[in-house]
Image (cartoon, rainbow, N blue to C red; front, side, top):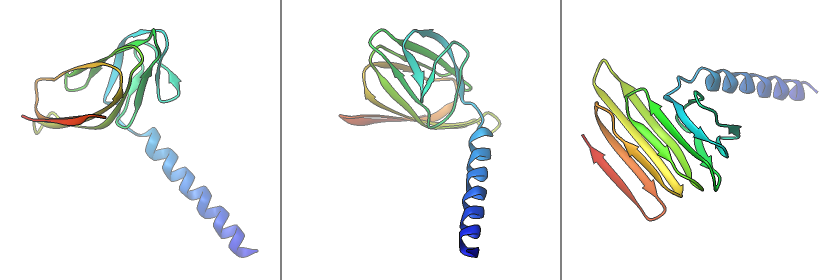
Length: 132
């Protein structure tokens, strides 16, 4: 009986720890333009919606979405596309940054910001890496 109480308490503690970590994530950017039928994870996307690292943007056949990131880079996701924001590191004080995007289907356009950073774009057909 005591082992069930400890397991329940442990499960509750883990869920609180994970919840606070996810809610304290700093946004890496926000949507600046959205045509209907676009989502970030499971949420319907609207202009001004904040995005975080590890978010997935998906658009339907008539959807599209534009994003502006904190390092002044931008991303445009076209119709019938899925793009995951794998990694985003930005420190304006050190002048370093790194971005990794995974585009599993569809079309997108990524324009770099003004920082000296590395970029990695993964697709089902290959990976493009740019340093600096």
